[in-house]
Length: 245
Ligand SMILES: N[C@@H](CCC(=O)N[C@@H](CS)C(=O)NCC(=O)O)C(=O)O
Image (cartoon, rainbow, N blue to C red):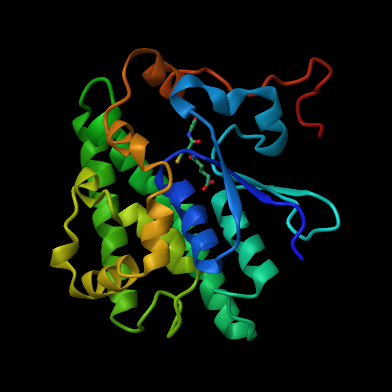
């Protein structure tokens, strides 16, 4: 008997698709709670209790748990769910470490740098050639690393599809926004086709797809300011002393 539920705080973006794809792969029931980031819903006090940085995705999990568990940061969510259901994360130490390393590569490098490529190539108010060159170049280096790795193994962390592949795939879909072309990388292309061909991946990508046409566009007006000009998201308590936790 199932009790409780998983709520996914979601907006149709690459980081959120990682989680909807994994939930579809796991075939567990979940509800979507849309967080309209262009309207600033990510800064609502209740959401900040779950996701202190004011970012989607986040989850709240009370599905067959003793206590409800909330998790923020997409990499942590993937890890949490993969451990909970004992899938898409190896159990043998060396193999598990390979998955974790490629997951961290996505979280620490691929996501942030491709995100900057999106920003300076598409969202910035004025073109800054230095930044465009830097992040397009960084994107090219990351694609080369992926191609090299996928020339050595079927999936990023070895023979098996894992949360590392789930973390990377949604970030390669807007390849044009990053100034990249997957068809120039035979190993990425092979892997990309294999991941794209999974029905659960397609289901994960179809969540809130009525919003997709809008999310690909450059945010305008207040949405732009909310996303890129808000000076700080979190108020530091008055009694906070510098350097003290
Ligand atoms: N490292 C975080 C990044 C999350 C993130 O950047 N989320 C974006 C959407 S993809 C967001 O919430 N943006 C709204 C904002 O920055 O105000 C993760 O992987 O979960």
